[in-house]
Length: 121
Length: 121
Image (tube, rainbow over all chains, first blue to last red; front, top):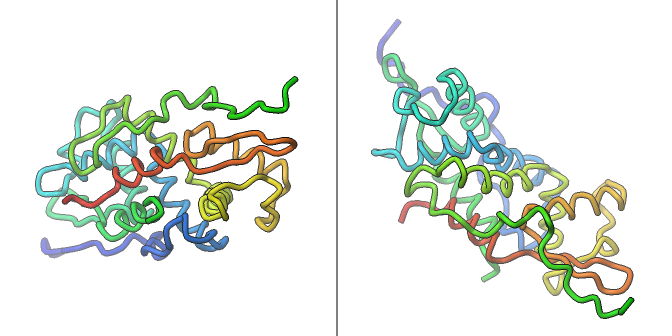
């Protein structure tokens, strides 16, 4: 066992999480595009998960571990579960350092979601 | 009965759908902010609903009725159901004209969602 495990890499479930689609005002999504993109929006469709996402996104240094999160009214295992779901959806990346897994926003994925909702220019 | 019914106004369930929150990178959302905002993301978290939203958003004139939508692989009542859900979440507005209800994007709500996901400036 080495203590320099480094990045965990992409979650097994997030191969489809790369930014994919034009602004929603441009043309209708195909079924396949809708399938992969809906999963990203769904990940933010839970109040606790959305709050945790904002906690990570706004945390000092742009990253946070479960050890930084204490006041959302759910247990630490539940926090871990939700952070994993956000990682599987491609919205967070993670890196293990020692005891803790640190999460940060996947900027290109979240920026792509923002662009999809951007007003018609 | 008048045939100039005009706008249907906001859906009963979308009083909380006004844009509410700062970018997610700015500060953690409060529980209440997360509650009302998660409902908007959840509305786009279903592939059929997301596809219908893109159909309305990209339709000629910026509006569409069920009569304009035929090729998403679900029945017309199901289309109607999903469009109502999007309206209840505040993402679409609707107006009845004659037989049909026409839907269009609620631009301020969707722009606020986009801004919440925008990268740190």
